[in-house]
Length: 375
Image 1 (cartoon, rainbow, N blue to C red):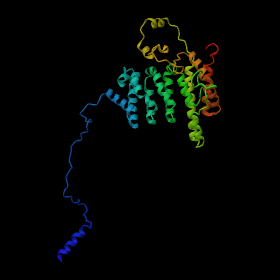
Image 2 (cartoon, rainbow, N blue to C red):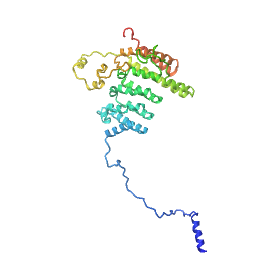
Image 3 (tube, rainbow, N blue to C red):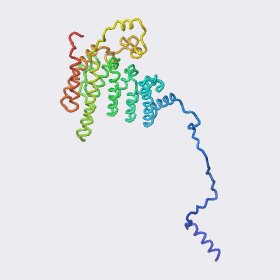
Image 4 (cartoon, one colour):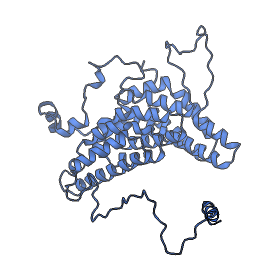
């Protein structure tokens, strides 16, 4: 009897929960291995305080590489913020007369920074584009002007992007470029007609193709042309059925586009002010080597001749003076823009006011143009 009772009790133990006393640790298993340890310090690889920090130039290049090639949106934004703070500090030092501060804060130069970061104009992340525009505004304008033609390539790609947010930020970049390098922009190769074509694609103002081109609509062309709707018009139409907030957004974007076009045409069609005659300046320009600032301001003084470049068409041509820009504008874009201005004025509001400003710019810029004297 005793053995049978003992066996029953042993079987019951498997189905009974052991009661533990409060504060008493649970019994450790027989195969337990103690892995705890004590340390008086923590050493992280490559972050020891005993090592010297990398130089500012190394950090600048590292953040420039992160901003241009990192896959993380936050990392690109933070790298751009670091670059902006460094460049802004260099500009403040130079403005205060503390030497060439921009060189020490920007070891790669403005050309190196722009060459790496220009593709970010069409970046899909909005915080990255916003921080990029802050960095652009921190750059010295005299060093941006020689890069106006290259910047314009990425700006034109941005203002015709399918994303409305990318188009708006690219338009902000174009407004900044018109402020710091407007004259260099309109006189660069493709800077006049190709930019007008970009504005037309963005706003839905379609100009007829030039005579003799493959896209010119004729009797025997076999193709019919239909008006294209602009991105701004699409946003306005979609907003009219879903509430006033989206409608206002589309109208504001359209007004900004018209205002930017007015600024662009005002710079391109502006009357050139003749400089006063100075015989000393004349003889210095003929017989003395150009200064470093003059060389930077115009790195390719004979670029309009296109001696060694690829053959250019009418859109890619360099229109260096106002008369050439007036001639090609009157032939290609003036009727289309005039029609678009009249339609925009009928909308009223911010769009109507921007269209009225654009009409005044056209009247002032083309008032002295005579199409009969220039072929």
